[in-house]
Image 1 (cartoon, rainbow, N blue to C red):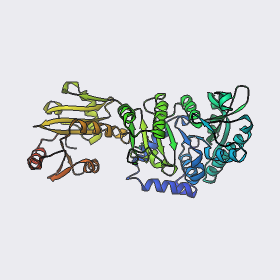
Image 2 (tube, helix red, strand yellow):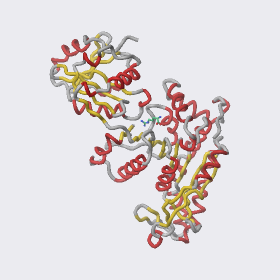
Image 3 (cartoon, protein in one colour):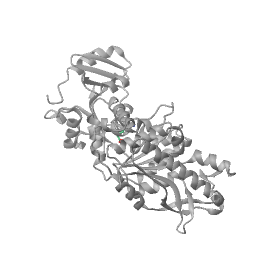
Image 4 (tube, protein in one colour):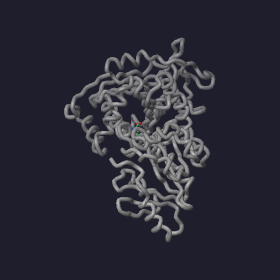
Length: 447
Ligand code: ARG
């Protein structure tokens, strides 16, 4: 695809606005550069598959087209798959085919196929034109990519399930420097046009391409928890069973989560799914914190109960990457070790020690490149469950303090340290604990 290195000021106004908005959301340009390097290093047809529902094209077209044009302007070439649910509802209804679904699939009589084709083609062109209006180059591919077989003609009519993905059309567009915009019109081996459900089209495409990212652009822009608050990250290896067992993951959320798991099960560990809204796509892609929900297959959690089980070399590397300083010589031997919670690839960890009958968190470390994945959160959750009464300390310049202040039940500054605690029921014990913790020897080498 295109790799234009033009400066922001040479970009069309909407793209420039997107860059400015993105940069203003960030502490510095380091993150954006890191992600840009990471994404650019991929074969571009493997960078991302972006699924857009028809409702977004109706309601948020400007932000969507701007976001896609922006990605193109920085040389990234996602493949877009769009639906057209609301549009089809309207045109089919007007043509005398009111909406009727079985198992979530739209019953599509053969006589309705002309309307389906014209409607989805129009939706496709509308998005392509909008991307072009924002200064991007896009190729209209409303049909011809998904070969499909009829699922149950008697019950569903012309509804197909993809059997083959013709990537040559997609690749040709990409080679010509155009973002491929795919509609979900399939065709059978004997050349009949069929309606393909957008989720199954995405699944087939993802299976074929093995992309690094899958993005769902939705109106809500995230998966929501029981209280309606967006969930920032889900690490399936540690969170999936809990979520499925919880009473509040029901209905659409449950289906969505199952669909995402199914997609990720088919992909390498490094791949991830993001759910966000068009206006926040750049922030989601180019920052650690993101904007929306990031779902990864993730790493399982190890719970180590004796110091001998720690892979010291990997743990030392994790600590150094996280704090920018090495653990002091003999750190692992001096430690009054209690437990370590470590993700299996040693990308996030918590190490605890005993302090009388309380638990002292000696190290909480997350690999720089793993920030935003939810691994730190997964470790923290295990730690809290393990240690209802917990103390820890942190230097005042530690960027994690913001999180510590939000999760602690109390904190006291003592010299260069802030000492935090959770779950202390006997407040009279706190002063002595704080003094003792602040006086503990250094565990990291001086920079
Ligand atoms: N920018 C990274 C990515 O796209 C991390 C995103 C984190 N997002 C989140 N909602 N926690 O993979």
